[in-house]
Length: 76
Image (cartoon, rainbow, N blue to C red; front, top):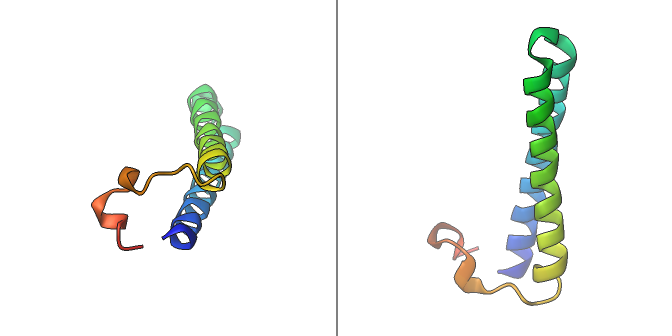
């Protein structure tokens, strides 16, 4: 499960960073709502950072319990 879970986490990180890029493009394009899009950009980057640190400190250190994985991912 660890390799599959690692790949899923990596994909989730990529998704968060891609969304941050999308929101940043909205921030640059729609000046009337720039603050809103900037906030979303920062939130997505923070989500990616949380996933990265969780992967590093828990999964890579072997401290990630399989009980934390939802049933839909249990077979991974």
